[in-house]
Length: 224
Ligand code: 3NM
Image (cartoon, rainbow, N blue to C red):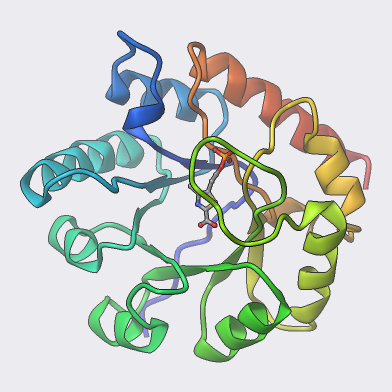
């Protein structure tokens, strides 16, 4: 089997073109975020038609490849396959992991959104590479219907991973002002602290926003 690429989940950017401030170019923002320290990118396009999505994904992959950063596609396996992305992120009601695994190349990264312990256990059984845990806090990015977990809820879900190799990231409402609270409050242990993080960078200053988060995460890791 082809070896999986090493993925650094420390600062995971979930894009959203509809969140960009007026006049801000999406591709410039993506590149600035990566230069600021983003280590993994997911393209999330909920309202875009297939032809445009393909174009955006293709150009985004070029940028990610330039910096050697993996690119995952939210939900759309067809787009991931068409452009040769590094994998997909699946929601609870998206394509089942087993089918995605069968259709994608053997070294593809597959992640799944999990809102509770049952979701986590099932995702581990299904053989995901990582779980996206949340929603930690409220957010305007997405209409989240699942109950907010807070940092403690993330901790409980992390415990459900037990000894599996599955990585985890936390999502929703995480900013530089509460990032440390999320890391400490979820009870992350030193061996996993590096790999459980996410943040949508939708800012007027994506480079600065990513740098700020990256500095916080690095400081947390160094203190472990
Ligand atoms: N996906 P914020 S939660 C885009 O659970 C998204 O998969 C989620 O909020 C999932 O921009 C979410 O505040 C919202 O990080 C992310």
